[in-house]
Length: 344
Ligand SMILES: *[C@@H]1O[C@H](CO)[C@@H](O)[C@H](O)[C@H]1NC(C)=O
Ligand SMILES: *[C@@H]1O[C@H](CO)[C@@H](O)[C@H](O)[C@H]1NC(C)=O
Ligand SMILES: *[C@@H]1O[C@H](CO)[C@@H](O)[C@H](O)[C@H]1NC(C)=O
Image 1: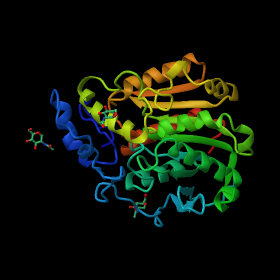
Image 2 (image 1 turned 90 degrees about the vertical axis):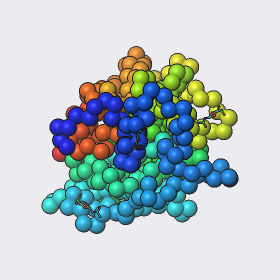
Image 3 (image 1 turned 30 degrees about the vertical axis):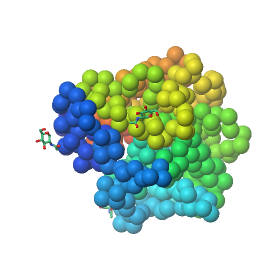
């Protein structure tokens, strides 16, 4: 597994849905698949009232793992409505540590499916807490289309305020809210970017919490042109559906939520630059979203953000969650970029 190189044709749409792999290889190896039904592809069922059904067999979840040797974990509601909630991971040490940096995390799934409690993600997050020696707060944000954007952005922002208020014992006892990093994968990377823009306006309000940077792992961005090229071009219909389900009703496809370059980019990029936030950007060229990611990465550079890229050859979308060796490389990268704040 460790050294296995995935052929670039072997694309994974969502890392956590291994069942998709077989059919995806078929789609990408055929020139065109005009009959591709994006609902079937995503394993979701549209309902007459506009909501969707996410069958449990395709989207399993697990409770906090009480037998993990790496971390303690628990679920905590952010407000009395019980939505959203967070799963918090505390590394296990022989000696108590009271100043762990805090990683606030947003999962992938196109804003429409998946949960922080899905088994591969739960294990990834436990490893993240253990490897980065950080308190990880992963947000179970509301999903579209029942809750269209910016609901997911609102929820992750709410989680930042929850951390700031230190109402939770683990945060107040073991965490250092002045060393906070926001991290997300795929559409979670999009969420991190948009929450970062908003949070750059709320620096005072968030004190004593201090954001030190953003980690964008294979982030999902859109724009004017199709995202995908080559063999993955016929997946465009799947992206269209995800945008349709998650954008505010009537919003055009080219808009600032999905396209960081829209209208020359947000004026808050200047604030992020001036705040000195670091941006760690991880990707690989076997990911069918790589072209857009590289475009956004270069755009951040042009806007003089303190952005560091780590782009590897080969692999696929979702590899950093799905492949322990690549996850390990991601941890090394993040530790390096945030070496002043992650010191264990
Ligand atoms: C892939 O396509 C072939 C030929 O069209 C078909 O026989 C096979 O069942 C397909 N496999 C999957 C996993 O969809
Ligand atoms: C709990 O975590 C351990 C170590 O990571 C793992 O081996 C075990 O399978 C996990 N248990 C569950 C129920 O996920
Ligand atoms: C998305 O919405 C646009 C405009 O309403 C429509 O033309 C397109 O067919 C939709 N795509 C999907 C996959 O539903």
